[in-house]
Amino acid sequence: MLRWVIARLREHCPWTSQLTHGDLTEYLIEEAYEVLEEIEAGSLDEGLRKEMGDLLFQVALHAQLAEERGSFDLDGVAQAITAKLVRRSPHVFTADGGLSVDPHATIEQVEAAWTRIKTEEKAAENGTPGNPSPESPTPAEPKDDDGTHLSGVVGSLPAHLPALAKAAKVIDRLGRQRSEHLPNSGPATLAAADEEELGELLFAVVRTARAAGQDPERALRSHLNRMT
Image 1 (cartoon, rainbow, N blue to C red):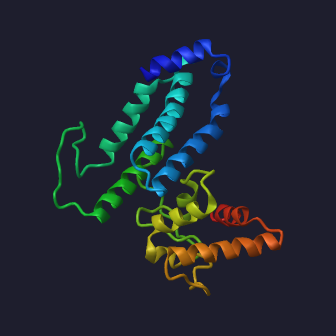
Image 2 (image 1 turned 30 degrees about the vertical axis):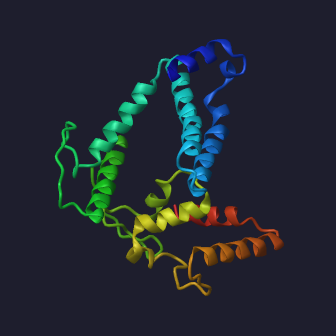
């Protein structure tokens, strides 16, 4: 029904019929943040259902635009993510999608397998061997267990991901031990006991930066870009 409604809107609505993928980007981001707001507010029932519907509409509308130009459709989107989940979850599925659960799999093993398979997929897409060529990383470019470098970790993340979230992802993907060898990774001069204090600390940093005419988001994003 949703696909039929969207197709009719594209055909008969003067506003919807003119939309492009580019036009929709701001709405996609906005709807994702509205889902986040419902979750953080603890509104996990009707409020979340409605906001997830708005987000689903964005996905379905992008798929409709693609279908109109003969590329892919919503079923193709679902097939792609289904295949990826099966492929990257060998602790649950066989290669052909059958159920084969490993009851002894740990979270660490699951994360390691996901990262390894993702690296192999990226290498295959780029036409390179499954294992990156061995290189000696510099102290400023720590090497990950699967042979990737810091620049590859940073570069694999979405370019438009907010800088604070992106920095957290970089540190998480490198792991605690390897992240200790990152540039400027010494102990912080200020520490927060919990996330409430951390929020106050981050706000103080932003306030200080703005008073100096600096953009903290751009500053951290630039620092991350220099790692690639």
